Image 1 (cartoon, rainbow, N blue to C red):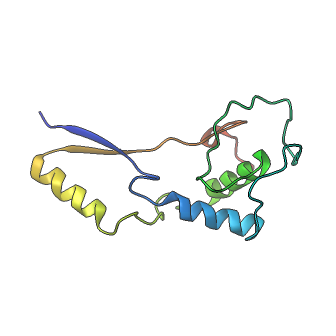
Image 2 (cartoon, rainbow, N blue to C red):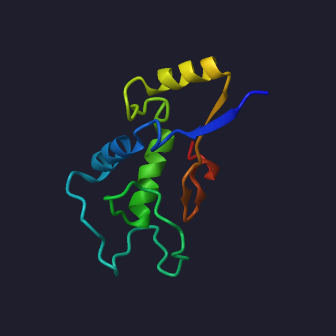
Length: 128
């Protein structure tokens, strides 16, 4: 029986952070505030909404709920976004493949869609 190993993709093998930053910069420019004022309300934000939801953006980026939703919507609509993420380390997938073949491991790559205030991004209905 072979060993089964699951690897997370984004943030482990693939560099989601730099690609996410590019999306945010494209949408909102290079000058994002370090933190939104506590009383700032963006279109679509519900001040009474549950605030227990963890942020789904990389560290160092502070976005309002509306900005975050817009960034993930842009990612959802981008063709091959996930397949185009650069690796954290060149050649890492090849090395894992070689190890898996040598040791007869069964490898799985997994990820979880972000959970936004309106629900998982992949569960949102399409506009088109």
